[in-house]
Amino acid sequence: MQASAPAIVLDGNQRSALSTVRSLGRHGIVVSVGETHRRSLAASSRYCRAALAYPDPAQCPEEFCRWLEQIDGAFPGAVLLPMTDVTVPLVLRSTPRLPTLRIALPSLDLYEAVSDKYRLFQLARAAGVRVPETVPVSRAALGGLEGRDWRYPLVIKPRKSTMRLDSGTRKRSVRYVADSSELVRTVESMLIDATDELLIQEYVSGEGAGVFGLYEYGRPRLFFAHRRIREKPPSGGISVLCESVRPPAEGLAAARGLLDSLGWHGVAMVEFKIDESGHMWLIEINARFWGSLQLAVDCGADFPWFLYQIAAGASPEVPADYSIGNRLRWWLGDLDNLYARLRDSRWTPTVLDKARAVGEFLMPWQPRTRYELLRWNDPAPSIMALRQYLAALGRKRRATQ
Image (tube, rainbow, N blue to C red; front, side):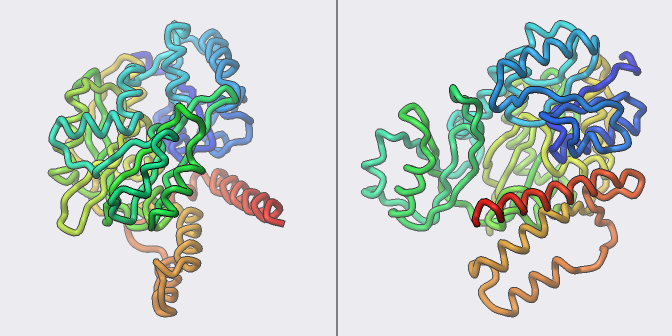
């Protein structure tokens, strides 16, 4: 491995990008950060050597791909690390035209196989992995929705989180419905065109959990797991407070069974829900870094550094174990969680429940809990994040006036 190979981290406003920049910077790697503008979260880190601006990959994918070709010439031999489901497939499609940039990603076919949630459902079923009942629906099938015997609540999710359109890429979120009329309205509002498909999925009540894997050309190298203590939104989504745990046996077996059979390469985020009986239900697989990546790094499972080494042509020395019981808190996301719980009586039906929620949020600094963005040796990103948060609040306020 060329120890001095530079790294280029894309999607600089992602928390995973910041974790990656901090990890590689501490190992002495020269890191540049790319975003649609130069002032991004990860670029504000002391470990970022250069900030790069590129065309918006969601709105101008072809221009973004041409930018990648320019970067290939300007940074020969650099390790390229995309962070989102917008940039990862564009990097994979551009790979034949990027002769010098180094990546550690699965093939485009494998990426699309796990990103298509219905194909993943079918793969999991065939492998004997526990998955919620899932039914695809298109505009042509709208008429039959109300006549079916659904068990509510239901989860409505896009078959693919990001959908490429003539106008660019659109990212859509998961919705929850409580009755048949809400089901029809939600599906109608989410469908983009006649070719679009959504998934209607059985709702699994329980705690969110993640099993995260690192593979080297089909060979599993490292697994890490956390449990989600609080999420945004509270019904399930992005982790805002999580704790490192040992990989649960059922979840690890499911993750390994699927990823081994696919001959995986790179990282994978395998997301589960744990029901009241302790059973683990596969929700999705993401072929990219995840939001709470910093927890793994803090625990000694330094995925960015290990993936960098694989991309650069070396086989990393990974630890046999990692620290258990550490917690990571994303304070601004936790603030959103609190606001949502106080607004919605489903989560805080009584005054006592609301007071308990506020007390949990205001609980003083706890042993073995670290704040994701605020690091005293690298404080600028936390200031940048607060500015972005307040600016977003201002935009929402103006939009509602």
